[in-house]
Length: 221
Image 1 (cartoon, rainbow, N blue to C red):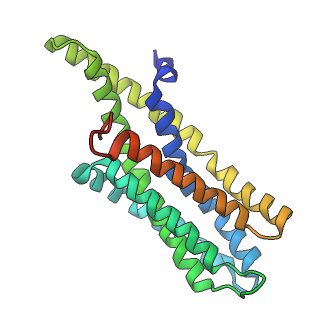
Image 2 (cartoon, one colour):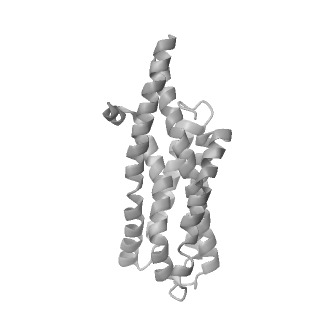
Image 3 (cartoon, helix red, strand yellow):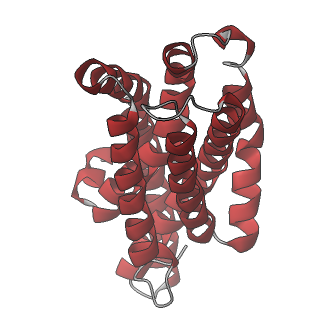
């Protein structure tokens, strides 16, 4: 019964967005110490590596609260804007051929990334049940019994999508550190990987805006 989610367009769209929030959180938590150690070898990575994951975990409930009060799609949209901005700030503060780098700015930029990923994790988690219950209600007849059945089916599909999206998002813990390592090995710098992350967040902004947060969006939530 749960396999029906693989036919649902919004399953795949929300998996993409959940990779952007939960996957980013997991991936940055795994890769943050590596990036500190490789780019700022004079800094003890263990003194700072725990700050970002703690911030992202503690702030996550705020994402759900904001989504309840202002709409999950709107909160998610601005989280992706903040994440794209955070990555561009990280690029600015990294050491390069003509600059020594600024660890303070680098750390602040990553804390912004962790905070935005944490809030977005909560808001995307809130979007999924709303989307799937609404979709099933739209497809149901107007009879009370049909609407009640639609709510049950929507909640069942939402639970399956949450599990599937979480499983895909967890791969961020592999892909982000791997991207850093591959970029450093090929170019001597993590900049190429970070530039790809910016493009990815831009795609998440576009998906969120078009399908969920714009005026007259097909599935406002």
